[in-house]
Image (cartoon, rainbow, N blue to C red; front, side, top):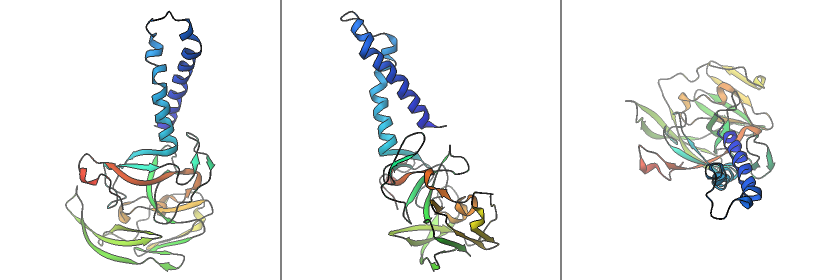
Length: 262
């Protein structure tokens, strides 16, 4: 469901009613007369919808985490806030950038429109920038020929399942974060889709090597063995970017996660 489009339609509809009341109907009503139903239930909501539309389109937008692909950073049921202007100001609904600001950096947790179905929002960590060569073989990440250093960080016990994953710390750009690998799972499960610029990737039974095209990004989930990401469906085009996740604002199952991140 395209909530941005629905909100825009409501904004236009209530805005028309508000303008009609303010510029025409109000002047012709008897002093002290009750507002007609279309003012009470339509035009009166315009300022509220306008404020919500502006806030959600240009400042921050809330999202709920639906899957475990970003464990341990983000858990199923986390409600997060996404900064909508960090990567530039975009027109709502059509997502066209009108003001350039910052570019995504390695290590950012980014929300974007899923390239295969732009009506869906995905969240992953930025691993490769335009022009980078990203390799993931034998569960080891290499960027531009330099293997990314990792350190064991103990076991991670999954809350909803009775098993633990091996947890590691890793530094991508200025960000140090944790990720998971399961030692008993194969290094690479071939579920590769036919995506644009597929020829820029080379697959083997142990991993993948991709050169990131200009204007695109290579993203991965922190739950490395349980994430469908750029290894499977390809690159994220710049025009699909929604914003940068920066805070957990609520979790019904664990209030201690409020305000947490990375």
